[in-house]
Image (tube, rainbow, N blue to C red; front, side, top):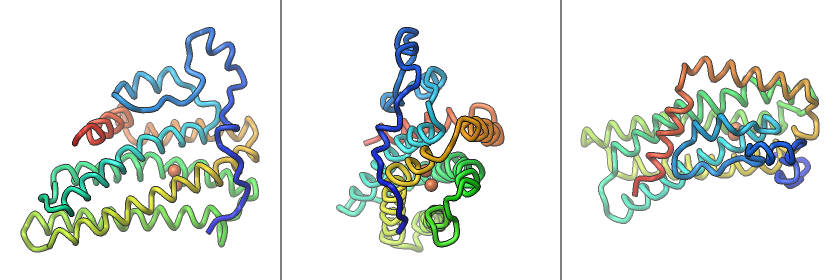
Length: 227
Ligand SMILES: [Fe+2]
Ligand SMILES: [Fe+2]
């Protein structure tokens, strides 16, 4: 279990230049990514801190996790396992959650926080990294179980159990980042650290490929909008 200050994140998300932004019609808080238009909104929104950018991505991820739970509950209540829908969630998990979001945390934010004194071994960063790894194993397990189920060699339970475990893991992981680790990082990072992270985030997005982030957010919208 990680320990540290539990400062409310909302207190940390205040704009330094909110008044100017409002006058210019620029949003002063992260948009709630509902109803499409993610790409357009991201262009207009400039997060005050790099953790605010990650929190915004957490909102996108949480909407997909809600859809995952709906699908799992439906199948557990007697429906068919929705193989195609779950494969789309696996794709989103591998590309957006892991490569993009966890990529930014592991390549940019966590090394920065480690330099600033947040412990890795037996500390919050080590816990977060271990949970990312557990998430990867669940996603691989879900993908394999879906193939086996589609081939008629696995029961629904083999698919649904790791889906539930994955959703539970990520939900509590996001809670800890939003409420403990990120506020701790906001208190430690100076402007130069924020700038370094912003550049590192941009490099991570470039490595994903042009337009890939927006395509994946559109996929999240599709997944979330499905019944
Ligand atoms: Fe994380
Ligand atoms: Fe995260």
